[in-house]
Length: 390
Image: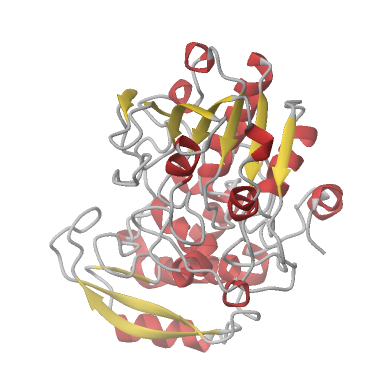
């Protein structure tokens, strides 16, 4: 079994934190291989003072839905230490407040990422790193494997106009890095400049898939229940920028999609005709219990990945929404309300990092033109300086 940074540190008795007052940025994934939570481990470790807990989007216990604000200050029921929310009603609520860090010697980040640039936890990490740099306290990242692997990078860069909490820094939609590697990348490339230490995973290589790690998957958010969900997410998160249901309110979000006006058989036939690598589409019908089209019967397709290595989720997602636009005509709409604290830019453009893909889908441009990856802006070369695993 690959050991996470937390497993490694726990076996060492958290020696690096002895004598320190510590704040921990955690959620339900912050557990060791026996599913003991980091907060409980730190609270029970002699010589370490757990002084505060910080929760990202969805909260410390993972009970809040996406884009739902979490109470600012509370107290953890088990450890009785103060808890602070890093996801509220405004962009300013995403960073630790200076007074919350008073008296702390270190911040420890231990949260499972899923390998897509839209997933907000790595930006919570980056903003906390900035706060740590200002407060002159040490920042530690306990690293974890990337559920969708470290072998593939897919997508385009983010234009300056399109940066947001689903893309705070420019990198491809599927970045092929761990949270620890991203912390090193952000710290230098974005000039954060905090005192950063990464506790690396033990036994992890870039060629490994999740199954190779021997680890069990703890859902990092309410609509990320399985590794299969994470694998399709780099393409299917685009649904949040449309009126197509991404399957929220069903048992398989992001793996299935649909709308009341679609014919599932026709959707599957059109998509299978594209012969996209590593995937087959099955007609499906579902009725969401919340979110888009709540209580209304929808038809669409289910994404069955047949070859995880050949599958390209970003390109597949673009192909899906181009096809749905072609089939739906004017019934297909782009999301117009505020998304992740931004009102001025369409949600789809924030997710895409550009308006090029949305405008190209409206014009029904060819898939090869829509899924152009030439604009990665030297990401592969830059990221190579910060990789931890061979």
